[in-house]
Length: 247
Image 1 (cartoon, rainbow, N blue to C red):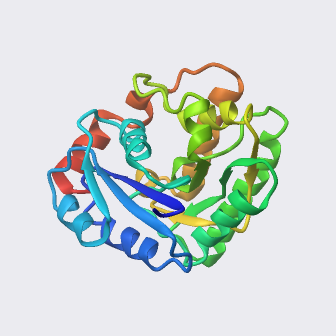
Image 2 (spheres, helix red, strand yellow; image 1 turned 90 degrees about the vertical axis):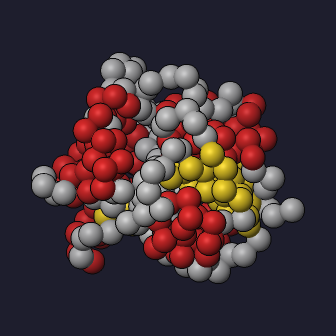
């Protein structure tokens, strides 16, 4: 049985998935299993997943939250780590994640910053730095700036905290999950644990807008408004385009 389960939800990501899974398989930390949860792909994502994953499962309920929850249920590791299917993970990323989860006292969850894979070095540094600043500010509200693309959790604590609300349409469930997890231990942020996700949702407006949209989502929770839903944050056009183009 592996110590860690890495979970990758996927919906029509054949353009990005292979690079994502290659980066996961290239991790210096090796005591993990890799589960890919297919969320109804109509492209070659399931076939690509089978080339790399230890287990590929299907989740019929649409949405990354339902897919991630299914992966957590299937996981055998003491810890689980969630990834995005369009994201590149540096080789030492999982090692840093496990160090935070295992070697720091009373830790139930760990997360790190994100930057955009399409950007150059300077813009990556800028976005990651803005993320770090935003996370420090988030401490004032108690709502941590955590994201499912870069989140590790003690699996036992996940279920104690009630897990993801798979029947909810709120788009900010990673923030709400880490808030609940704090009842059972520490949630820590590692600014060195940077990952590089796709900026495709903001391709026209640029990566700065991408960072702003993430902040707006966090602010919705910090102010206890809960008005941003998956239907508004990820529009039907967004899903329709992914189904047509495999993006």
